Length: 363
Image (cartoon, rainbow, N blue to C red):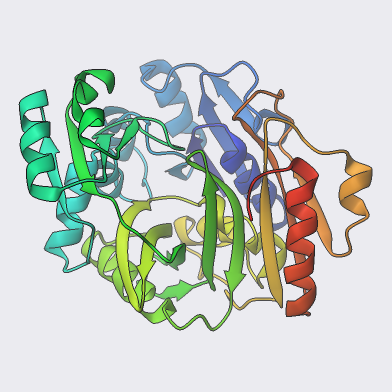
């Protein structure tokens, strides 16, 4: 079995690594000279809309998937005429436009923060009048890791905000005074079987995920699973999906979903019977996914900008380090560290030690 992946970053790298023990080989298409998945997968080096490379990819693989949302829909539609593509193109299309995504949530009865479309400064001022302040102005397309958005806290912030964001189609969302951010990560097989990992509690800084903690038996997991199941079944989805939510009391409000393996699920490599990466490959390859049961308690720290010294990480009992072999750069995800333990008290203690490794501001 050969799986093609559009995108050659760390998610493709971890997919390829998960595939090796299964005898699944991966071929990635990515324009980067230094695609970090290249050492573990065949790398087709070029643009996502290069028809020659797309044909070569289609001729080389049994099925195609993707590792991030901003790949070309036209390219995926072209590939899907040649070879199966999972998750379905409709799932990617919904997540490439925040307004379409929010409208899909609303159509499926999934609660969200209040939102309105914004296509001019005048529309922004009208939307602020209806939604109120604070609120968040986001581009409808191409935003990730905190990019493409502005928090509007007071009236002075509204003036010129649409132009500041680039004068592009946008969406205004009510600012949510949430208790915590969580994500539900699920997998659906070709036959329609759905499994879910433990709910993940997430802490962000500067719009980037810093810390993700697995929460076995979390009381709001059934709500997240219900929301995710509605998406999976509506989209006739195959593969791993991550649904990010804000929790307010005993309610969840959907923020966004990712039609792929997800940063907040990296802890599953060591912390679950079957990782999100292995199960995504199994699902798209038409093989029944494995158990998602947790193996104790897990926490994952993103390494941003640079990796901490290996010796410092290995002093932490239960730690596992994943270096993506990427050049250090401010704001760049270059690796992650997971700690798995049977002792919940130790997990709380070690979380502080992890944060101190990068003074990451995650507490």
